[in-house]
Length: 134
Length: 134
DNA sequence: ACCGAGATTGACAATCGTTCTCAACAAGCC
DNA sequence: GGCTTGTTGAGAACGATTGTCAATCTCGGT
Ligand SMILES: [Zn+2]
Ligand SMILES: [Zn+2]
Ligand SMILES: [Zn+2]
Ligand SMILES: [Zn+2]
Image 1 (spheres, chains in turn green, red, brown, yellow):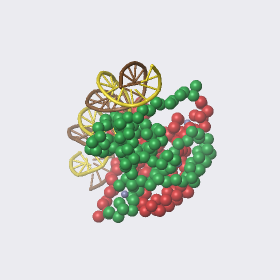
Image 2: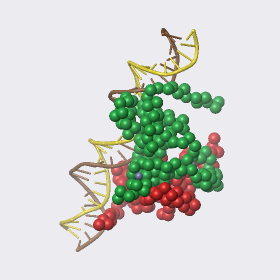
Image 3: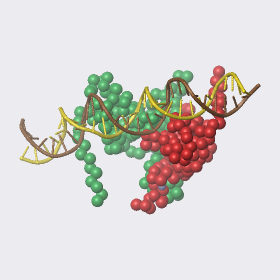
Image 4: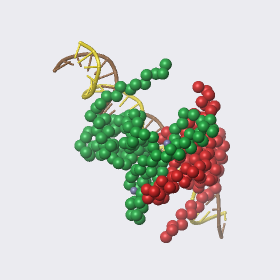
């Protein structure tokens, strides 16, 4: 039992290109826009491949994913668990750590007998700069 | 200025049907599934109308919306601000209030100069019952 | 360096949830 | 009862994502 889910992951030009393009962006980006960047940047990568690469990165914990406005956004993030404060105008992102919130989530879930927890904690707003431009 | 955004909202059979169907469900439901329930329940309501009605309810604060797995889910909720603890298997939902978390969100956002805040805080897991069935 | 098994790619079709269009309809008001 | 105007619904349109599958490429073994 305990199925051997080891996914033999090969290193390809495309995956590296996606990994780099993602790391190059400080903000959260969609698969579509990342694909565009790659294309205009000269790199030829299929859209489907970008989707697959991003999904793989997220699965391997090399990227964080969150859905906003109907689409999924990805970002190269610190490997440790954290949350985000995101500017909904320019995309600027701040990684947040809040042990207190983690504890709260675990405690309240336990109180109700829930297990196999997972949670989403994200704050959206306008950063100082974007707020000024108005 | 300060545009008069008063949206004259009429009372129609369809909207009432959606409101009722939503209230009848203790869990979060998608527009599609709610439409199905209504249909099989004899009520004839167009799918587009269900989408519109749910969006209106959410806008009026009569329902909470959250996106999970690519689709938007709705639930008739307490009118006061709160968050959710959701069983990802049976959908059972517990409303949570956490002033501490609210404060944390406001404080950390302010520290970074963010304004016009909004946040999502949801905990997913398996409720005691669903966890037992395994 | 050469092979071969099997993972990966990419152009395109197919899905899926959601929104748009617009003519027929109905709620609220005189 | 009429009128004004928000509302409805069937179907088309849309945008994001996933599936298809033959051609291609990676990598461990030789
Ligand atoms: Zn900004
Ligand atoms: Zn956390
Ligand atoms: Zn459950
Ligand atoms: Zn809150």
